[in-house]
Image (cartoon, rainbow, N blue to C red; front, side, top):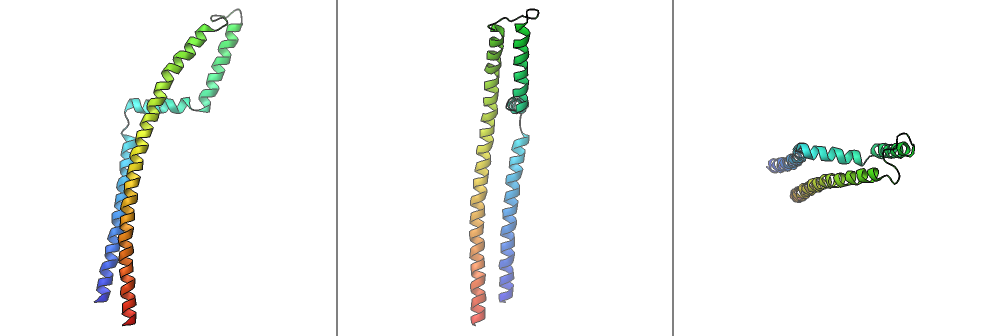
Length: 151
């Protein structure tokens, strides 16, 4: 009879473990769906922010700047003479457009992180509660085994 009860309790523990695994899979699925549900503008701002924050962009930007200044120092190509007013205007326009796009991407990333952290916290609480239940069941099994040995 005790073996049947012990087997039932082991089955309950296995069910608890399956529940934890299902909840973990659900959280991972939710996070994946959240990543896939980006709009075109969100994807574009993320790609733009990724490019602007790269060494490739810095290299291209420095090359364009050097080329612009070099061409405008030469008397033949000088369409923007020193003090390079057109260059200053162009750089200001780039900065004015670039900053809000990067901020949109960062805001969206913050929202994603907040949701992800909330889901992870919920999973941790759930896992903690289930582990406590498992520990109680294991303690009960240990007590039964000890009582059986003493009897």
